[in-house]
Length: 305
Image 1 (cartoon, helix red, strand yellow):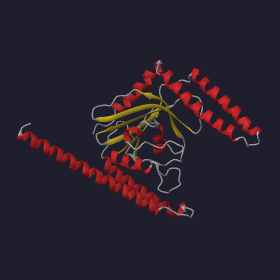
Image 2 (cartoon, rainbow, N blue to C red):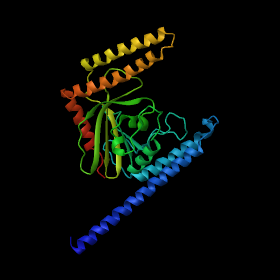
Image 3 (spheres, one colour):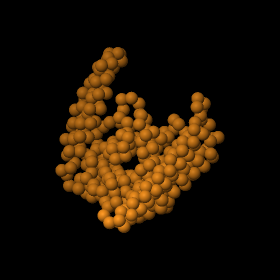
Image 4 (cartoon, rainbow, N blue to C red):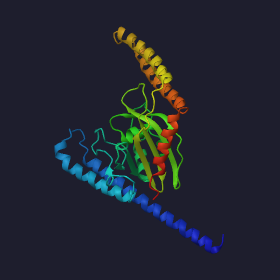
């Protein structure tokens, strides 16, 4: 490399470092402001007086939305209806929406995409959020991985980040490729559910890290994903064994703890086996290619800048 080339390269590296340091400082300032609000609305041992805090809480969320908007910049989504809104979140510990991912949410028009939403945030915000959620769930439940790419592959991340009233459950991976400017892209077929069980996924979620932003897009699974009979049988076999163990527990006067544990374990194992079956079977069906194409189109349409 020539002397001039080294000077130019050094200047570019310095500029990139300065830009990154500025972004990190803004992320830190946002997290500090959000945590200050959480401390402000923490009732401690007292009961929350929601009527009293309604106005200040609304103002705090508006402030955070404005701060986050500056962080993510001017995001231009084709077909988006208006500016991004703050992800549904609460600053009051114990609320169902407390701990949601700090992100702007964009909604889209159209009959078939009316439920499509795009969440946008920064890698720095995600990193801080993951650190805070390292032990968010009780012992025995898998928590979110600490690295962004690993977290975006984990369905439990989406449960904590964007779904306050139901678990996001992955049925199958979708084979998406990262577009230019993206260091990571992922897609999956999922369903939001409150209990184990059979059926079919009804949602596509894609995620990408592209040019200083983290994107998550949720949309209905179209065309409709099928119910797969062979996998239904897998679930029903486990369910029958689980129910039999539950009956033994009931017949014991609720004293046979081993039977209760076996019933719960069988349901958990059955759910995993059912979804493993689904992930394998659907990839050989024509509908999978169509669902995959829909996911890829979502990834490709993410703003490049």
